[in-house]
Image 1 (cartoon, rainbow, N blue to C red):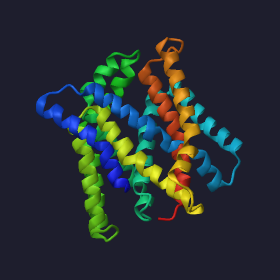
Image 2: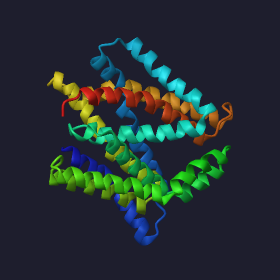
Image 3: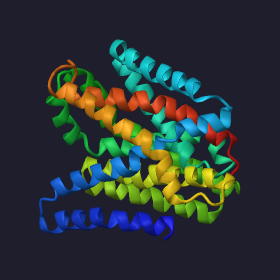
Length: 302
């Protein structure tokens, strides 16, 4: 089965439920949330579960050095968040934009080295996703312990000029690269269709479905495929079951640690809101993961 067909089959339930919701007013929120969480747990989180292997192969370093590197970056980010929450959050958004853009164009030798374009592409995706769901985000913000901080973030997201600016800059870059023969017409069209599909889901679905559509189908599956080919290159007999065994241990560790932290927050052992906990966890994991993947993409031949 091809990767494209696999993505389509997984996406069909979300497409069908979204159409039923739009046309017939069916309440599909619980199904969409449950299905989206399953996809994020099974395909989203595991895409970073072989960072230790990439780090070891690319840097020729032992596992204990990787552990020290990962924990140092992650814990430093978490500590800084308590002192500079707004600054760390915006850094997380910027870093995520760079990571998403670098992964998207990692197979293109020229585009993956265009830093401004890569960041603008990622910012366009993130800004569109969140700006289209301001009411849902605002309602969630009011239910947490620190609404003032999150309202500052929402003020940025509500600025449509900023959002449209990133989209326009990204489009202009693509037109320029096409006109100067840096990319082919087919590549331009494929990117346009990809961006249009993401925007379609962002406009006509909930924030959960929007995040799932991009994070799982637009990013994680793409990275998982790259990682699988990376391991298979050195071992032709390496199969999908072998790949699952590789990413399984750290995926389980992520589930257990995340679940434990959420339980501590839920029972108020940790005096921190769930929204803040999600931001801290995501940003603390994204920082070392983005560094490892940057090393991977920098040495990877297109």
